[in-house]
Structure formats: structure tokens, C-alpha cells
Length: 200
Image (cartoon, rainbow, N blue to C red):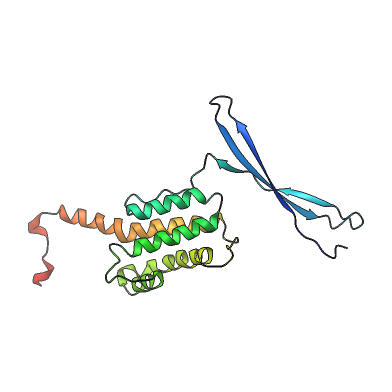
């Protein structure tokens, strides 16, 4: 019987050349040891191989940033797409930063808030945006776990980050793109058909 066991893990990086274009691809394979519980005499282990990870060229994570996402937020969003295949926790921390930049700009900064917590809290108080509050809280809390702990939270995986990407795009769609579309259609109406609500 194994009285004490420490898992072993090692990585192998290999280069593969394409015969057509001569470009190289770098792959990283991860091997982890697992004890053979049936062989209690020799204390042998078997090795599990994790699916190879392409390190170069970098495969950008989907989805792309929303077309109407503010430029600074989109830049952070794309940085998260770059690092997500290698480090989902790093991508989560970046997306949290992107959310903070988004909420401290138009149309949320009335009045401006000094922390992301207060930004999200103010959104929850606005009737037209209240249903976005939960998605914002998910991005904030998961991002905090990745960025604010002394040890990086490695339990955050690619599926978690995929949800954060979707939430951030949804926030832009509902708070920026949607109102812009409604305003554009409204502006196309004949002036004599529009109601002046200020005169009611």
C-alpha cells in the first residue's frame, strides 16, 4: 500500500515543421504520474499525457470582441484571448480589468465610481441594466480570484474563461450596441411622427 505519494509532472516542448510552408509550430506536452494501486510491491506508476498545447503560433481564443466595444476595453479583451490558451487565470484577471475600464466609461460613469465593486453595485440600481448585474458579478469575482490572491487560482479553467468572454460581449451588446441601434432607427422616423415626451 502506498503510504505517501507525491505527484510528478514534467513538460516536453517539441517543434513541428510544415512541409508545405516551412513554418514551425511549437507544441507542449504535459506528463503527470499516477500510482499503480494494484502493484503494491514495486510501487510503479503510469504516466498520463495531457492533450498537446500549441504554444506558437498563438491560437487566439474565441470570441472576438464586440464590434462596438470601446477601443481600450477591446485591447484588454484581445490580450485575454492571447493568454487564455496558456493561462486561463491570467485571462480572467485581464477580463476583470476590461470590465472595470468599461464600467468607468460611457454610458456607466454617472456618477463615476472609484472601485469595480461600486461600479457593479450602481448598475444593479439601474432598472434598465439590472439583469446585467449577475454577469458583471461573475466577471468581477472570478477575476478577483485570479488577480487578488497570493497564489494564482489554477482551478479557473478554459470553460470558465469562455463564459467571461461571452458575458463581457453581452454587456456591450445590451448597454451600448442595443441603445445605439434603437436610436439609429428612431432618428430615421419622420420628424412629424416622433412624439416630444418633454411636452407631455
